[in-house]
Length: 196
Image (tube, rainbow, N blue to C red; front, side, top):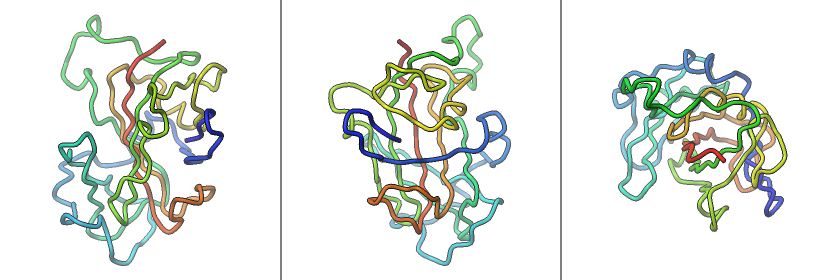
């Protein structure tokens, strides 16, 4: 993500598919069956592939997550995403749910990004935006405090306030900021906080 406030590229991440097509691309079955043990998420040989499991996430009790990569070393050769939490998943009637996000909506976001090799937190929006959550305008309009690539906007379109999304960025992605290891893949947990 790119922050206007400090003009520092914190992650130039490209998602080539929209959220609806991404959700079908990855398994969201029981993540724990393919998860590695605690400690580094994965230290073995890595094989970039289009057939991979989304990294499992387990709350760490401190507002973050323990991240587990697949034991088989299959790291993503393409980006992917899935919904981690949505009121729709719990059968709330449509009338009781917030409206779906559309182009032009200004939304507040909170995110945490983790490296799959280390399993460590590498970026936290609460550190980048200490006064209030980051705000983006879907579709790239002016008025936000953060900018994200168009593909991220597309992934957020159709989601709702309160939804939490996991986005997976491919192994050895080009254009990463210097403080991120190029020889890794990253997963980002995004929480949609509010709409202005």
